[in-house]
Length: 548
Image 1 (cartoon, rainbow, N blue to C red):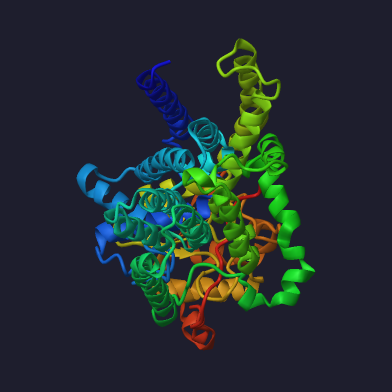
Image 2 (cartoon, rainbow, N blue to C red; image 1 turned 180 degrees about the vertical axis):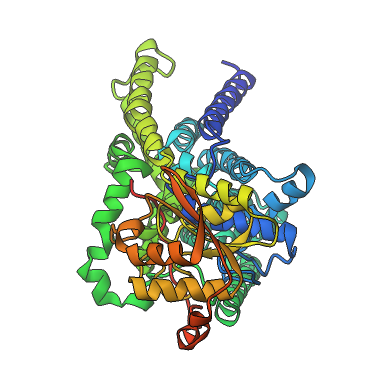
């Protein structure tokens, strides 16, 4: 076939992969943020709301679940939430706009991966790897979630691709562009720093083969790398400053090696059993992992003599493992952080798919090869992608969504609400109430707000928040804490106290809602001296997922 015909066919294949990726990611895009990642999505969505409603300063991201505010938090650079806020300004508030922005980044990530694989391996493997990223359930689910991770992966993929082109073709303008885009990717989410490992490998591998590995060339690259490193370090130092100097004194993320100590990581086997459960159940699924394992048994296809970087994705995996080594508990607790692994796993699985379809040595395009490809792809989709997505898309936080909508209809602008969703600590009900207020028990800082207090402390908390002008208290009837205790069963004294001091407005199969009266004279005494706000310290991780 003429070269132009091959190019047209490859473009058509890539277009088909992108359409497939879009179909998977756009499915049920209008679902409220009530799936397995509702907790983290609600916080991200609140930051978008507050950019629009309170301040456009991207360096002061703010949530709405710690009272009237301001409630600045130490977070990654809010690229997706900021873009979403701009869309709110243009089109009005729709909770699915955040998903749509994430999907846009995710689709670009599939395209960027295809171009990167084509550069370091070849076109056939680019098709296979991009296809796996397009349908892999974890990648699909994260890419359609209102989270910063789709922007991170898309940007570091783009930066890596442009950097490889620079190394291969001496297009010096791409060096700066790659540096800017990669820096934004790491600022969007810190696990993106893993890309430094394969990019460093590509530098030495490609330039050495080309005979251009010399001090002059390295001195062109080093300033860009140093500036990128300084920007990344500077921003995250700022994020820690914000999270430790402004209420509620919360820096997102915890469970790092320097927090827990090496002995604790060893005692939990670096949380590998939990990581394997996540990887095999929904993130990658067993069919994809089996394909990736096949690829690891053979050498990669790239040819260094043709200015390729054959071990690029092996080194990407090594970089991701290094990140996991230092942040195993955080990544296990908040599994969207595994998204940095989506690149090497999809590429290796694509390599395994390629090897299996070509196992009999038949020519590309033969009917048997296409039949084998179709059969394997069907097993991956039906046996892995669809069940994994169904598991994660289950509306675990639906009662919290209903509670929030009901609080929105009962309250008026300016009212402060207290809410306990299905998962204690999840701010989803606050988000859908369209008001500010508090999760119950109040969260932020180092205190663990996923655990219910006993009745005496719970009543003190309620009365302290009532004194801060809280007007409504709502609880989902299936609300339970991280120890499995249901609020309505564990805090019967709190409910009895509410029945004595507040008006029960809603009592149905899903929720209880009370209108709070002003605080009684009894609670203006010594018991009101208890301070419920979090202590000033560093971080406490948000529990990532609902009970799947």
